[in-house]
Image (tube, rainbow over all chains, first blue to last red; front, side, top):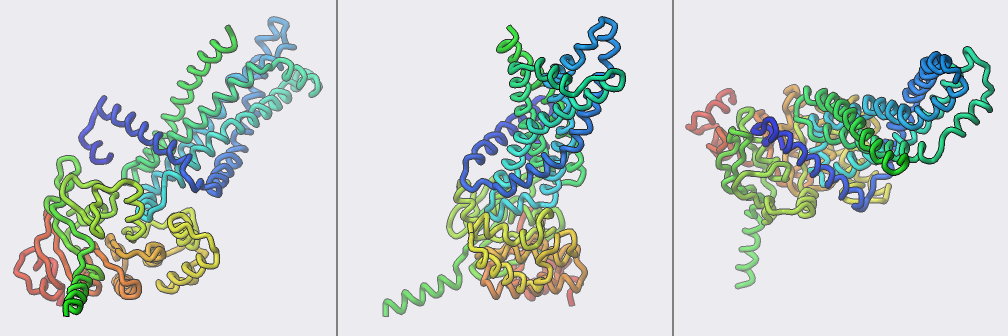
Amino acid sequence: MAEQELELTGWRKWFAEVGDQCVFFTRFFRNIFKGGFEWSEFIRQCYEIGYRSMMLVGITSFIMGAVLILQLRPSLESFGQVGMLPKTLSVSLIREIGPVITALICAGKISSSIGAELGSMKVTEQIDAMEVSGANPVQYLVVTRILAVTLMVPLLTVIGDVIGLAGGFLALNIKDSVSYTLYLHKCVASIDFSDFLPAFVKTIFFGFAIGFVGCYKGFNSNKGTESVGLAANSAVVTASLWIFVIDAIALQVTSILFYK
Amino acid sequence: MEAVKEKKEATTKTKKEAIIVIKGLKKSFGKKNVLKDINLEVDRGENVVVLGKSGEGKSVTIECIVGLLTPDGGSIKVFGDEVTDMNDNQLKELRMKIGFLFQSGALFDSMTVRENLEFPLTRVLKMKNQQEIDERVNEVLEGVGLVDAIDKMPSDLSGGMRKRIGLARTLIIKPEIMLYDEPTTGLDPITSREISELILNMQKKYKTTSIIITHDMECARITSDRVVIMDSGEYIAEGTFESLQKSKNEIAREFFKDIS
């Protein structure tokens, strides 16, 4: 690939990169079903990606829930609809804001760290060393990471949603006095299956995009120190862009399937 | 009489069995022709040192041998099989017989020394018996004189120690061929000499065939059975270290001018 990049520019380079991504995806997909799945590395990655991101996702979601309530309150108050605050918060948080904010945080934290880690392994010839020893670097490094992110982002989103609702409850009680049972009842009653399922399914795609982009950028970085930074940076930008593209597609699909 | 003749022929063949045969190897990166016409034969048990200036494509040659790079033209036969025609499985089998020591050592920096050494045993040789694994790990660590470093992280090791552990990791699968990419670069003269002597000792112990890429003349003197000098993508001189010292070739003389 490196030798081709010297020749290609503009659209040709873009098409070559799309082709490379397809090849990379095929390699990833084939290696999922090859024997000798790296369970220990997969569990380690789930811990690194999921558990170590929980604090960041939790704090952000808590603040987001509280801020949403504080921002929505004056608008709804002018219509005399303060009682709608739990419903408005839960629907907006679970359908849209929770998944997208969590995914963007994960793109910033996880995609960049995977891009930098694999990029640095490429620069220091660790990936080549794995390959020439006869081991399978795609199976060990790529499959485990992509599957771990695909599993962890939906779980982080669910956790983030719950913490966001808790943040909203706290913010609501700054001016009003609402019992947590009433608040919880109002939140749960306003959410149905068509709110939760599409949002949950799209987080699986968000997770896949974050993992895939991070691994692709890191695995295909050039051999130079500068390329580690570029791989991390490019992974965040591309993954964030993909999150919005997937979100837009998911909205269209959800509209057709659930909100006719 | 005929049997004796056959045995004699067989013995001669064993002595002069070329297990790496490179003919007319070509490789370009963009417009730069790095390898123009490389021809080399390496006999079983032989140590061939390739000398050349930096950026001449010395490492490219050995990367083509293990299939890390695909040549643009020519033929590479290892154990009689054409490397350029091999599929993934054939390449994997070949790589299990070849050890590749990278310039940096290429230790997996997220793993301890023990885990680095266990990696090829569990992933490539699929060894499961922990006692056998421990025995092999201790054997190679004793060989490179670093038994005490077993639980250290690569970041805690010096440059020379990293090279030793890298050498141990490649030798642990008992390869028939060893490819060394500038094994003494970046080391002080004393450590360089130690590494060169270690390469020679390991070659004697494991009876490997080796190609050593270097521009360290002391390393070449200690380790070589035969020296090949590379310039402008071609091999321009060949012989024993002593014979090349007396060579009239200008580039060879440049290399040997500081050698007493």
